Image (cartoon, rainbow, N blue to C red):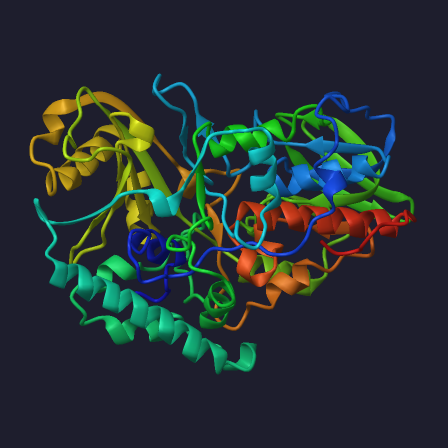
Length: 486
């Protein structure tokens, strides 16, 4: 039996329904000055002889938000990134398909109704976006359009499951009363399309069998947010690619790429960062790498971090979503007039896909949890064969139109992330709050794992967490800030 409730599968499987499953959000205001910084500010070179006010480790959304905030207060900052690009788990492949860039990681602006500062920037730049609610929707049952009774069955299951999450989660008084999220989802195991609404637990790259995920964490993530894929104006795609957009926010920042942090030392005089490219000094440091990297102890801390901080790393593993894109020589969905969200109604773990991705002959596939890990672990030919076989279940003859192009994620094996989204183990959801606390007023952690409850796994949540960590770090070195927490 599955021993965790997969948020991502639940969101994706319900994306096309009117059930209103709400598992995606961002919250909290953001100082506008941090996004008003000119993009040509800063330098790409870091001076090892200089002591920076703040050193930020990791150039994903949290690191970018942190660095921009520090600069907006007129203080010096250095942004260190182990990969050859900024963006973190937001990455757009711009080369595989000449028609369109494709996002292998973060893809949506969420919680737009309540206000999403990143979406506001995209709008100000007049970047083409598409409201998810405007996408046509199609349900397949085998090669045929699913009958209304089957769609109704699926909608009923997902709606009832959401209600159970909200009702049972509200009764959990605290971590001591937490229980595996699967206890909620398993009540629906005999429903016809259970597998469309719930995934199974995700193995991490440590090879250890992960414990069950937290019902309290799932409840916190779910409650208090509008339905992301059924509320007009709530969730948006961006045509130019989310990875491209997030990377653009790093333009002009003092980023050092290909700089792998090996050790972070702290002393009364500040922090010292040892990397493959030299040693850098700061008054404070903000660590925005994933909890997967921190759990792997890829960075040494001297002196050792407090036990509760280390335990927080272990309490917050990363799950995996696999995103794959295949190109076709012709239109294999002639009856669809535009990009269409497709749900396969099935008794097995299902793949959701977007036909005619942004009006092209490219199809995007999404899989979660164990299925995601399974697909990412296949050979390239095995991945192609598997995805085409699953597509053939709905569209016979699709394989003949495949043009050989594939772009696919590899989050389960990515040593820079060790996964793609955060979840909490049972009884350990408060680890997020633990990571929001500074260590000796010198080290600050930020990222989607430290975001407020409804913002975890979200770009805006990570960005705002970076701003909060930056204001905390600035306050710690004596800067008068507008607010201490983001």
